[in-house]
Image (cartoon, rainbow, N blue to C red; front, side):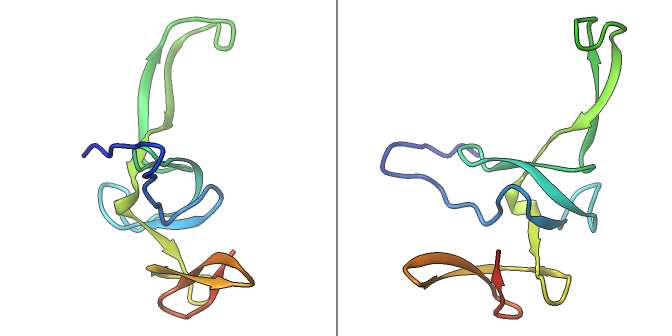
Length: 114
């Protein structure tokens, strides 16, 4: 799925860097982890310790030995659900305006998500 981005349109993503999420589908279903990075244009996210791949690397200054390294691969944001701070389970989010700023609100408990 390709999302066209222009100056006028920027897709909204329900997760941000540093959020705690739960994986809803795939091999790592049910795992809870922290978001390391979010690519808004591609709607992909890197999650700590989830979707681990093995990558063959050539020797370089950073890794003089080379060989196979394990690292996180990106997951589509539709496979992730934000963890509700009150209940500790997955929740959908809504947005509302408080003090002139848009904040994310949990649909399950109504709590504001920081």
